[in-house]
Length: 543
Figure 1 (tube, rainbow, N blue to C red):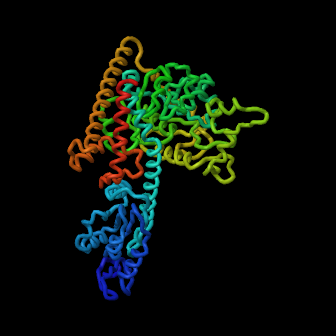
Figure 2 (cartoon, rainbow, N blue to C red):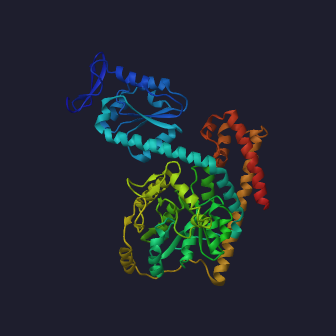
Figure 3 (cartoon, rainbow, N blue to C red):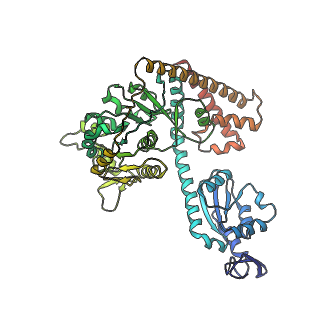
């Protein structure tokens, strides 16, 4: 069978495998090198070890015996014949070990799903325990890179959740209590091409084009771009906001409460919904997977569910691609800036520095942005700067542009790549000429019938929001009673109750430990539940 394989044979006093004309283990002591590799593997808590082509599983039992708490093995075999051999030759009970999973695919969805089943990890380490890894070396390398990138992103998200989670949850409950005033309505569908405006410096070059072709476009503005557009006499058809803090409220000052439609997330700062008087549309960012967000989605409110995209610019493009058949044009989404100028003229950040401008004080804050930690040129020799956060947003926008949906036309002429097709203003004008169609302006309901519909939507939403908050208060009371020993709940019932209100765990860096219910974490959970029971009482009563 030489050259075909796999074939099991004996060399050096132990079983070996010949596949495609080569031995997968050393001819002298096949199990020796894998055992040494397993013994030398870096140990630590919450490590995921990616074992490519486990073949006869040499080294795997030794590694399992050394694993620290929270660590696990993900074994991947992409050769069908070797996979069958591995399943057949696995030591008794090995595949039943809850710390090990065997996968016969490099599909990202399956790898990530199986890794999630094994636990929550800090790092991914690759181990080569057999020569079978060489048959699909590039695929195994990509799998390791995918898992490591996913773990890194997961921990970045965890850090963000620890910092912002309590604020986002508080905003969600406050906005649920104000749904009667917000009166959310679904987003209208548009037939014109959509132009998304970010607040980057490239917006300035697009202003003359927008002024000339305004009638042919549905204009979607990120909140920070709104002052720049209004200064140029351009009124948007939709303003998009994602900010949970009060910082971006200055973006709405120049609007003076005008009736521009607003698309804001349910976790946005509550004052955002009072900044404009037009119709309100809601998104629901999947802040974290879990029962709380699932229960919000099941409320039946007109919420547009969207993935966590980080930047309001990426968020706006995602929403714009859902408004109609497209295409979507974009400017101002630079994710890069020049020294001394981070935003387009008219943006609040730039205006604040201009107000402090004197002969001896030249844009101190704007220049300071060029010297933050991690700032680097967008390319060797480029005068434009970026940083890791902006780079990650540009990468997310490139992923969005590559997803199924309308074409994204990049009219910026500068900045980090965002995955759209670069186009000049002349090319965009030709496209608009070819795409002329009647367009219902998305200004929401008008007249008596529209007012009636808005009142009805507000009343229904208010009832749903009040019911959710009241139900959440009851859940918290049960949880507090269980934690204080006043109500008897078995382990699964207790964990199910917490899982439905998992925003309680968002500030915890070690939330995954809840499965074992350690007393120190339960003590912190009690404090958190008591805080939220008091806070919801305040919100529900309108204080």
